[in-house]
Image (cartoon, rainbow, N blue to C red):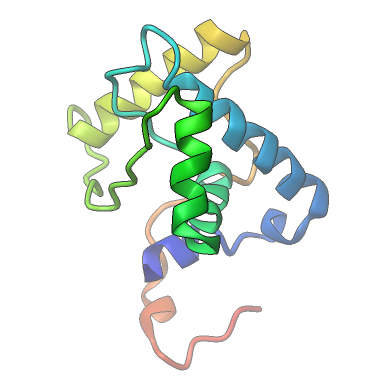
Length: 134
């Protein structure tokens, strides 16, 4: 989870407006699963959305399951952190490209959040237990 922490440690993640927008985007992300294109597709969150998703699951797993079932017509959206290969043609890469298309087709806007997207691998110093954010 250290890599996830790196992704959500950018300056926007302290901004209340950015976080409120993230909550709205998370709900829209869940609704992608109710579309014909999204119902059987692996959908990949932005990091803005992923923070909301992790928070939702960790706040109360039973409530998360109930919320999903209400929003998704009786289904739960499972979270898979094991997909980490971002290389071209990888499962994660292909699924992210599909998510971008479904989002654009559904909402009419690009699936892009300034300051909430993948920002590369963490610097080596970040893995040091004594690392301090500046």
